[in-house]
Every structure is written in structure tokens, then in C-alpha cells.
Image (tube, rainbow, N blue to C red; front, top):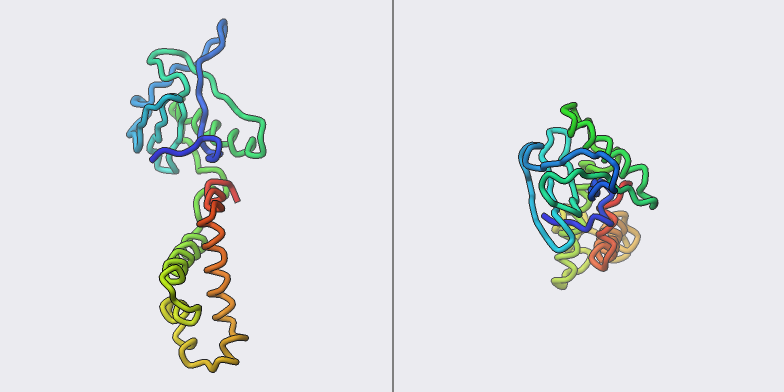
Length: 181
């Protein structure tokens, strides 16, 4: 699993320490189990397992034994980046990292809604009507509504919003899933 660090605010960016500074030598293999490890032209991307939530690291200079420093972009995700760096710093020095930044993990409600959106979008792209989608999603009362009742139904509005939001995500808005809410 590789991600674009500029879009994932919880990614800790590490690079070589400037001359005359001391820095920590980070060996990802010594930090614990790696859930992902990918080397590329831009460095090494790793995810280190942690019971409270994994640590996503981007080692821009993956030279073994080289002291590293953290880079914190001054963008709208600054506070989240600092929180992720603090978690990693605690882990680096043998302490409990603590929970992921607030808002990062998807809530049960959000996961359920995303699943419904995907199912509704699949059905709609397959040619299903909004009423067919409602029935497929378990809203059986939709089958018994007259045309007039269906047009003013809350079920129809809900299905319409699911399909609309799924189309929006499909067309690029999915990147918002990587942002803190």
C-alpha cells in the first residue's frame, strides 16, 4: 500500500539532517513489524505496525545509518502532521505512541455510508433505477409506494444522495478520505 504523502497528513516525512546537526538514526526494521515497505525514486515508504494505529513514514534519504530529521510542511494539515510526528517520536524512543490523530480513523457510521454509496453507485452504473437501488439496499417499502408517494419519499431522497455523493467521490473527491475530518 503506497500513498501520496502530500495527501496523507499522518505521513511523517524524514530526510537527512543538515550538516552540524545531530539527529536520530531511524531504522524502520528496528521499529517493529512493517506492514508495507516500498522503495522508489523519491525514497522509501514504510508503514510500521502499532497497536494504536500504524506509523506511515516517508524516508526521503533511505541511506542506512544516516541521521534523519523530520520535515513539517506549513500547510493546512500542520497540526495533524505535528500530532503524527509526536506519536512517531514517542514510538522511536520506546514509549507508547498513543492514538491516531482525532478524526483520522473512519467511524463505523462513515464506513457504513461509504459501503452503501459504493453499492448504490454500482447498481446505478449498471442501469438500476433509484427505486431498484432502494429495494436492493433493503428499503423494501419502496416497492409498495405509488409513483406520487415515491417522488416525495424520504427513501428516494436518501438513495439519490447516496448515488450523488458516490459519483462525486468517483470523480476525484475520494481524496477527502485521506484528510482529517
